[in-house]
Picture 1 (cartoon, rainbow, N blue to C red):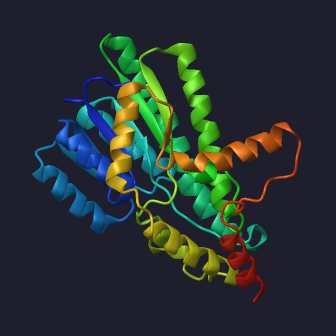
Picture 2: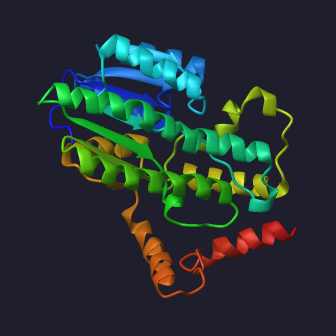
Length: 300
């Protein structure tokens, strides 16, 4: 929980677009020091100029969150410039779909590297800094927010690699919350589970590592890409609205953050099936037309 954000420090990964940039703008408006971390240098430069123009103290850092060495360098730079951060938003993520057996080793390494290891590095590097700061300062308040997805609570077909990565983030963050409660009452955690929100995640391939340029999408991956593009771009909840939900949750020590709580009916059906030892329910029960379109497309 953070009750007063002014003059505190926020570290945001995936900060040059989507939820990261929207949160950076709120942080600047609240008077925070803002650390912008992103893998895309041109977008990072634009974000840095914008947030500086808002009057914030800014540290912009190009980083591949999947790299332990690069994340260590980011943590060292934050410590040197601002000291321990108060808000850490492990938000960087990439999207990928396709039938789960068609994902290549490179696909798994890329998606898990960013979506899971990026969060792992953020938690393992910044949490000790925050704990040390809280021991030294009785007024210190800290909060870690990890971006998962509704895909971390559901198992929709043709997007298994993404589901796996986001389920890992939910489990990691729930455990982080419980672990923090054992040792500290002034640092907490939240998990962000957005549904379809217009961001740049469906164009994640723009930042795929150069050494994977030879990887060609399979037919099922192309179908998944097209369906995700349509769903995300038709989303009615904006990244700005989700960013405000994040800050509201941090101020209230709210753990689960949902952009579309109406989707929780599908989560409830899944959990009921688990408890009842029933087979996984049809994820398209509410929209059978989507399931039929996907089945037809995959058969062609």
